[in-house]
Length: 160
Figure 1 (cartoon, rainbow, N blue to C red):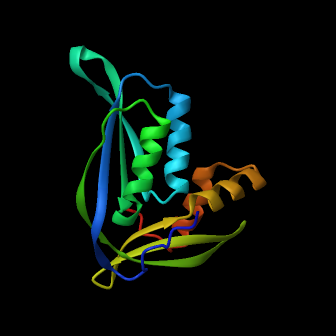
Figure 2: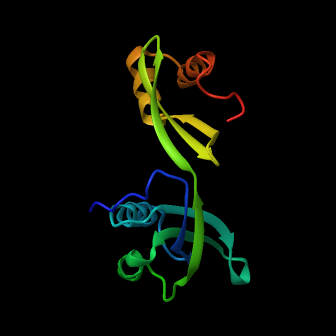
């Protein structure tokens, strides 16, 4: 299912929802499956954190971020695909940087670099991981070497 992406310009999303669920009785395989479903149906971020629950039982917390219009679908997936009996959710505001994609030349080919701007100034830059991974595998070189090549080109600030 295609979910419309937010605009690339710097903006604030006021109609976001953060959802949380704690589990102490679900397998890791199920958690991976649930994560995939949530992303496929419009979750913008999904992650798990190891936690300790009452009586010191080890557990896992699911947290996700979605737009308000995806709330019902996220609840449907979580209730039907997991063992939970309840979901916590609350409104959240997200400040998103202006984003742009640029191509950078390396000795092994082009790499897309994602840039984030705050107030018109680039504050974040990162090469696209999947492209760097593909180059590393194709040329049988360390992934780190691909990243270093992009850094050496002076295209990305060293502290990002």
